[in-house]
Length: 568
Image 1: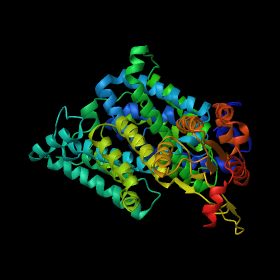
Image 2: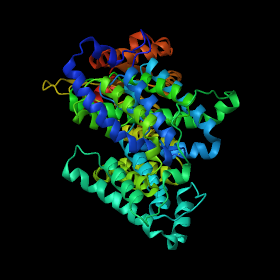
Image 3: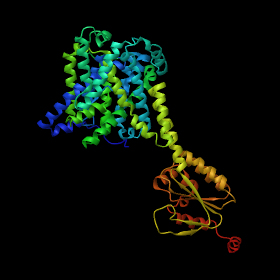
């Protein structure tokens, strides 16, 4: 991580165009057209599921997808609305309205740009995997539950947004199933499932929408709710940019939601880019990708759009159809724009149960049940983090889930590190090669009155308390010198320094010398900056245990009584 130097913003489009060719354009053109067609039903479905109109979903895919490809750091990333944002967008709209969503998305864009400017693109990748799996599975279950009303044709209005009350309403109204709507939904679901078995290149969701919509429109006696029935005639005019009111009160209320959008967007985009890099062999600039995603989320709200991020499914579709540069992403946005201008009247005819079938398949693919099954064989700490994140996502919301999941993961990680950090006590003799890979052993004699404590691992607040307790419990007779061997301490924090300072002062008050051994340069620098060097004397901070024991033996010489005891 580097906070200094120039801004790491190098869009892949610029480098791609510097050595572009007609052959590459042909491949990108084909891939872009296919991805645009695949993205159409998803953009519409994600828009509706998020609580906005299909038009908003399309506008988000057009503008956001274009900016992500133009300014991002991944050669093949396809941006747009995704299923991961459905839950949080729906909740923000329910609580703060459309203007609140616009402000939260705008603020999330600023956060993403800041993350890229400060070169934090690689840090986002360190989010614990069980957290990612947990909230993704939770989102999948939540998306599935939002589609029950439309899939079964229950005709419910004002369905509760909370998971448990929502299912309570569903269960009490399952007697009101519209069998025609359910039949249409099942037909669409079957087409989506069967199509990839025929050819993986065929967009199952689009084929399902075309076939089912045609049947519903042309066959007499088939009447189910359509997009046009629910939203009216969809506009085909390009929305005019509009502003929103931004003040400190609004910022304070929406900052947690904006933070969640930013972190979720960063995780999903960089995961998608990492998967794409593994397939294509390219290398994504994580910081540039975050800046590009941020720019998309800054601009999209002014046109009424919802959050934008990299979409793994559409990105992989781009790759499998030959796309290798950001031009394919630009073509995908242009294709969606042409559909928006000329084919929106046809979108009005799409049955709502058909879109529900599309989202049910999306939620199944997001669930990652095979991954969850694998994690169940991992340590209990990973299972705990996954379970807590999953349950909090489903029962409460994504903001709480990510915060609590991260907190639990950090606590469990620190506990694991503390348990694996050993503190050993030596007296009389010390093998300086013990615990190392060398085969040459040298045993040093330690004078009576000299105690050697070795810390094996990071010396931070949890270990500092453990070390302090060990010092009290192992103390038999008053020593003359305490050697603290720190050859395996990679870092030290302020709590450990504070405890060490207290130990040195209390030892000095009892006329006990303290000598530090094997201190690494970065740890020594931290100790000197904290005043430990002046308190202890820099000559008492040794770079090797041999020097430390020579000094300790000199400070605790063998007396006649000790010699007689040793001879006895």
